[in-house]
Image (cartoon, rainbow, N blue to C red; front, side, top):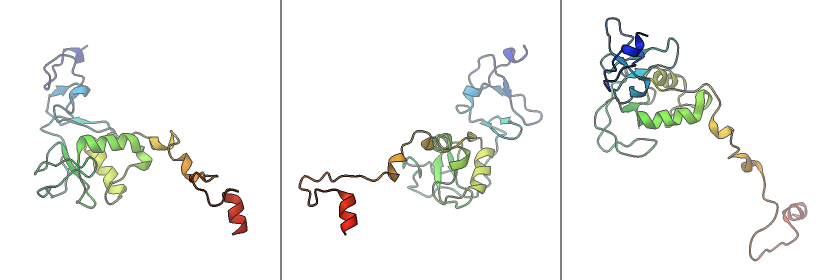
Length: 176
């Protein structure tokens, strides 16, 4: 009942059910307003949420150099660290937008998620969870839809318009 009266500090509407985990902070917000309000919700351990003032920041002391692009979408990055820009804590060379790495996490799941540049998993995963990237506890989506199933299948006949051996691939291999 009390949650229905809480005002969201982002949109100003009632029904804000999430309160900043920082002791003494009374900012409340809707889960749907998290991104717009630059808040962080950690989808691990205690599922804590933080307002834009108290949200965690990456410990990496780096800033994107001029003309740095997102390693995922290849769009330009801002020239300073911000809520929307993130870096791999392991290699410190892979810069990406928060939205881009979130989309990758949703596709890769916990078993396939790693830095798209250096492929570090341990440090990268811990940092992304701390920074509020939601990583589903499942296998990658590309393993569910059989997109790669045909990679193991060998083409059985020649499709060339002028086939030099019309008896088939298996016979050619047997005869050398």
